[in-house]
Image 1 (cartoon, rainbow, N blue to C red):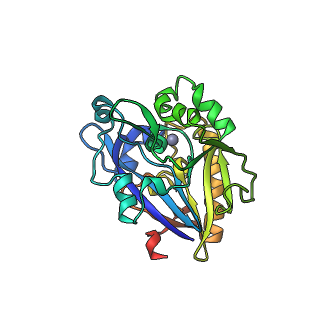
Image 2: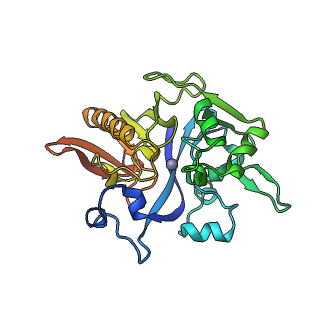
Length: 283
Ligand SMILES: [Zn+2]
C-alpha cells in the first residue's frame, strides 16, 4: 500500500470562526490574519494505492462554483486536485473509491463537475462514493446553521448517479467494504457522523483528521471551531483521539493546515501538544 497527500488549493476562512471562543491574541501568532481577519487554509486530501484500488479521501472545494462564491473564500494557490493526481501519474478515471469524511463543500466539492453544457456529473466516473446513512440524511435536510455548508450541487448528483453507498463503521474494526482502513472513527461534534479514517502504514498508524483537528493550531482542547455543531462533544472526541495518538505515536494528517502536512503529538503537563511536524514522504 502507498499513501499520498494531495493538495487541492488554498482558501480563506474567518480566523475567529475557525477558533471559536479562543481570542485572536492567542490564535493569530500561529495563524496570522489578513486585513479582513481571514486566515489561509489548505484543502489536503489523501490518496491510497491499495492493490487494484485507488481510494481518494475527500476532494477539496472543486471548481464549479461561481465567481461570487469563490470571492467569499478567496480560492488561491497553484494546486488543483487534477494537477496533484497527474503529478502522481493518475487521472480522475483511475479512482475506484471516494470516501467523503463529511459533505461540507470544502471536503466534497470536487466530487461533482459542471460540464460545458451546464450539466452536473461525477468527477470520478468509475468510483464508488462512500458516506454513511446518518450523515447523508443530516446533509440533505440541513439545519439553518449548517445549511450554507451543504450545497445540493455537491451532494444530490452523487445519489442520482447510482454510485453512492453507505458505510456502517463499527468502532475498532475495519469496514468490510474498504479494508485498507483499520478503523473509521465516527465523530459527532463537528457535524453528524463525520468519518475519520485510520490506517496502518509503514509500521505507523495514520489518521486523516478531517475537521476533528483541522490544523496544528487546534491541538489544545479549547481550540474548537465556531463552525462545530456540538462543541462540547468535539472536546470529548478530540481528547480521546489525541490521547490515543500520543500513547501510540500516531501520525495525524491535517486537512486544513496550510503549512503543516502531518504532526505527531505527545503528553505534556498542559495536556496533549504537538511533538513533531512531518510530511508523509518522511515515513
Ligand atoms: Zn466541515
